[in-house]
Image 1 (tube, rainbow, N blue to C red):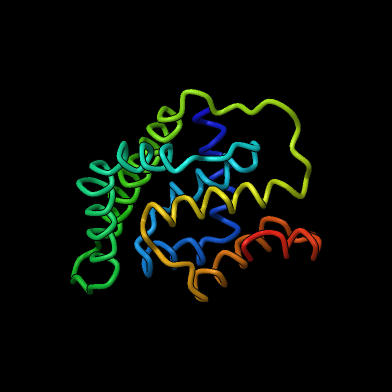
Image 2 (cartoon, rainbow, N blue to C red):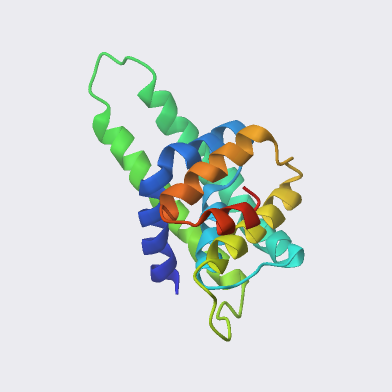
Length: 174
């Protein structure tokens, strides 16, 4: 399950990385939790607010004490001009940061004992379930669903589902 989630995350992050980074940097959202919402939605699995709360609590200290400080260090190195080459250091920090992200994903998967869903989900319902999960996460974070956030999630949805029908598009929160 963990490897499936990791591979899925790499794929959709690559498609919409600027949108995910905007959500992370401008709204302080956890990209791994957003990816988890999308992945579970693809599996037809809705998250309850209690499950979102548990997932967020389970990864909180890893994020605050390890991943975010590493990201800050890497970005610091990216934006200064050292007289010596620091590319090796920057890459080493990135590698450790990515391993931390991977551990966070393992914790998220382990937070839900039953990820599977019984029954089939219609093709157009995936996006609705994904957005349901995201709204639960935004509720947990007490972040309003304002126009810039809506626009950013629209971009992600259209990159994931370029052939999304207007009817389904209108049914989701978009």
